[in-house]
Length: 407
Image 1: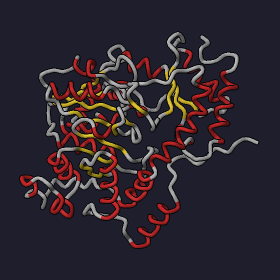
Image 2: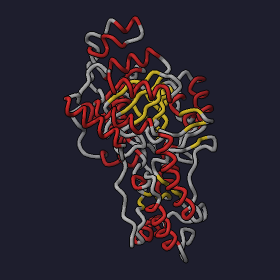
Image 3: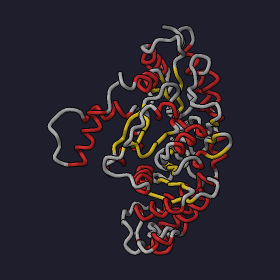
Image 4: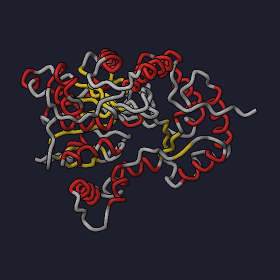
């Protein structure tokens, strides 16, 4: 009898569901002051990130916007951004009039200090990096490079909730770290984002951007910013307390959730790992998140084999696809052409599209994406590994005889 496909992630504990139900019954569905369960989530996440300041937002994208705004980025400022990342690592820069400069990666899904260095100009004002699929690059090297150039470093940790580098949580590197805690992330409140920083002034500026007087009147830490709290900047990008309660459930059980996820993935790795490689950005990174379950064709296998392999796996009942996170230069290419927009924000998008370059300018990002397969990770989070075992059996049948190494 076929194993039933499990309910997709996210799942929540009975205690979390009871808490949210009680909040709805009491009408506790909003919070202007960053108190209650929102404060509980922030303080618990702070403890998990070495005691750094944490500010919550309604999405990871909003948190990235607040991060860039807190750093004072504005019109004409260039910010180095990986081409291969979720587009929200770059899109908030357009709102500020800043210029995302896309950077290719030569090896692995991350961008190294050497690759960033090649794109620095006199207009460069900051660097943003992404821990794509939950793996990090050499963060010591990247932090040292950013400090030497006096460039703030923003780390997008949205794929890396349970990832560490040399044993340290990834949110403890750089000037500001941002985590999405929405959709199917390992920590998910449905929607939400968390900004992490050791700098109280940056935390206050981010709070001024994303919140308003019920919170900013009382919570700003730096004296010269406290007088701005009455008006603030009114972004109203705050998190719902319902989202906070759900995300807190995952945060408090993160080690358990990660262990269950990795137990499922070990069954897949035992089969797929015989035919495909697991891309790694750094051997010093312990990726216990694996937000996307990605595998890469081995070097001797032609790129054209990827699509045929996907068809074979899909036909066998394996939930395989190309990685959903596509290189940004390919996404913005759809905005090329046509008459110049009259709206200034749309014009910025058109300018990014015109200057982003194609696969020839970003060959490594394009090639790596085209040589990878991704399994739909939302089905591999439960304590029961029966479905992962079944998918592994299906993959083994699909790969028998021909295999991923055949050309």
